[in-house]
Image (cartoon, rainbow over all chains, first blue to last red; front, side, top):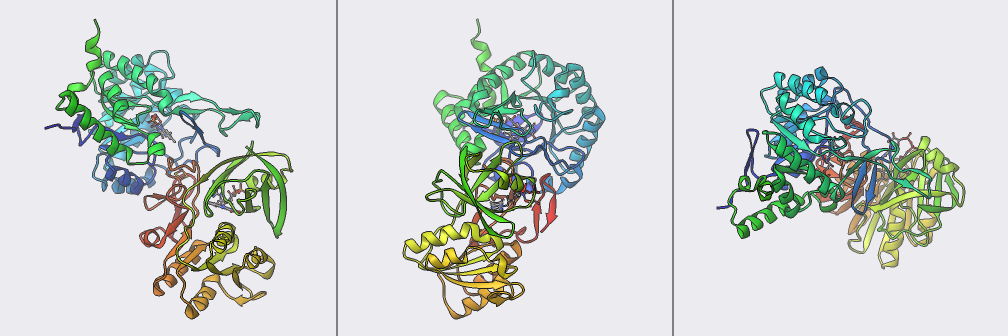
Length: 305
Length: 254
Ligand SMILES: Cc1cc2nc3c(=O)[nH]c(=O)nc-3n(C[C@H](O)[C@H](O)[C@H](O)COP(=O)(O)OP(=O)(O)OC[C@H]3O[C@@H](n4cnc5c(N)ncnc54)[C@H](O)[C@@H]3O)c2cc1C
Ligand SMILES: Cc1cc2nc3c(=O)[nH]c(=O)nc-3n(C[C@H](O)[C@H](O)[C@H](O)COP(=O)(O)O)c2cc1C
Ligand code: FES
C-alpha cells in the first residue's frame, strides 16, 4: 500500500503538496476550493496588522519561464481574517497562516491572533523581496530571524514555520538561526528579487520596479537551497519554487523536503495541478518500490561518496 | 505594446481608443491596459476587428492619462483574458446599463453575422448618455432605449424595460452587462421566464491571470472564470450585488 500522507511538525497532511503563500490565499472560499482540488495543506496570503492595498499595478509580469510579481503584501488586516481562516478550513485540509511584521512583537501578536482564529500552524514571512521594511529586508539577518522565531514560538502551541529568502550568501545560516529560535520547520524558498524592463517603454514594467521571480526558472535555486538546509538543520524542510509536476516535487523531496508548496503552477495549470502531482507521485512510488514519502526524503544526499 | 491609432469622443466623458493592431479575442473578454508610468487596469474590448478598441469613462488618474495619449504613442496591452459570451440559440436579448454596452456591442454584432436575431435594451441616465445605439441599429439589432429621466425612450431602469420586452416575447438567452444591482434584477426576471442568462461582472483586478485572489467572488475568479458567468453559477454567488473586495482584500458593500 502506497501512503502519500506526511507528518509535518505534527500536522497530518493527506499528501505532501501545499498551496504556497500569496496565491489564491486572500479569501476563505478560494482556499477551500484549492483544498478540495487536492492540496494537502493551505498556506494563506501573508497577513499584517493593518489593511494594506499593496503596490500599484502593474504588479505582475508574465514571462516564458515564470512570473515576476510585486503585489506588495496586500491584505485585509489581521482582524478581518478570522472568517477567511474559518471558511478555508471547510476545505478539509490544515490551514497555515502566513504572517508578516516589522518587529518581533508584531510577528508574535499576529501569530497569537492567527492561533485564536483556528490556524493549524503559522508561517513567518521573513522573505518577501518587494515590501519595504518587511520580509527579506529583515529576514536576511540571522540574529533577527532567531529573535522573531523565538518570540513567536513563546506565544504559540501550534507549529511555527520560518520562510526564508534565497537572496543571501548562506540560506543555511538563516535556517540554523531559525532553528536556534525554536522554529519547528523551514520553508524555502521565497521569490528571487528581479526586474523586467520593456525596451519600448524604456522603463521597468512593475510599478514597484523590483519584484519577485517565481516559477520553473527558480527551481534549481530552490532545490539547491533545500539541499543545503537539509544538511544544516534537524527540523523538517518544506520545498518551494517552480514545482508543477511530480518530477519537480521529487527533486525537492530527494533534496530533503518533507513536503512541497506550489504557487505559480496554479496559474499555468489551474488548481488541478495538485491532483496531477499526487497522481504522478503515486505512479513513481509504485514503479520504484517506495511505500511512503518519508522513505524518499533526502535520499539524494546518500549518493555522495 | 500596441500603437494608438486614434481617439473618438462618444458621450460626455466617455471615449473610445483604437489601436493600430487587432486583437484576436472573444467578445466579453478583457485586456489589461498599461499606461506606462501611471497605472494598469482592466478594460473590455469594445472593438476587436479590424482594430482593438476600448471604450472607457474618464474617472481617475489612469483613464485621464490614457485620454491624453496621442496617436503613435505606445500602450501596454496584456490579454485577452477570461471567458467571453457564448451564443446560445437564435433569438437573443441584450440588456446593457451604461458602459455595459462596451463588451455587449461586439458580441451582438458577431451574433447577427451568425444569423441570430437580436434585441437590445439599452439603458442610460439621460438621452445624452445613450451609447452605441446607432452602431447597434446598423448591425440590425432592434434597440429599446431607456433613460432614468425619460429624456429618451422608456422612463425608468433598463431592468424595468427588459421586463416589458420579455413579457411580449420568448428569447433563447439573455446577455447582460451593467451595474450589479441591475444584473441581480435581470437574473430574477430571467428565472421567472425560464430563460438562460450570461452576465459580465466587474471586480478589482491586480494580476488578471487568476493567481492573486483580488477579484474573487465566492471562490471563483472574475479574471479567469469570468468576467462572463452563466446563470447556473451566478445563482450560487452569495456575494452578487452585495459585497466585493477592495484593493486590500477587505469586503465592502456594493
Ligand atoms: C473586467 C472589467 C472590464 C472593465 N471594462 C471597462 C470598460 O470597458 N470601460 C470602462 O470605462 N471601465 C471598465 N472597467 C473599469 C475600469 O477598470 C476602471 O474604470 C478603471 O480602472 C479606472 O481607472 P482610473 O485610474 O481612471 O480610476 P481610479 O481613480 O484609479 O479608480 C476609479 C474606480 O475604478 C475602479 N478601478 C480602478 N482600478 C481598477 C482595477 N485595477 N480593477 C478594477 N477596477 C478598478 C474602481 O472601482 C475605482 O473606484 C472594467 C473593469 C473590469 C474588472
Ligand atoms: C503572486 C504571488 C504572490 C505571492 N505572495 C506571497 C506572500 O504573500 N507571502 C509569501 O511568503 N510568499 C509569497 N509568494 C511567494 C510564493 O509563496 C513562493 O514562495 C514562490 O512563488 C515560489 O514558488 P512557485 O515557483 O511555486 O511560485 C507569492 C508568489 C506569487 C507568484
Ligand atoms: S485579478 Fe488576480 S486573481 Fe483575478
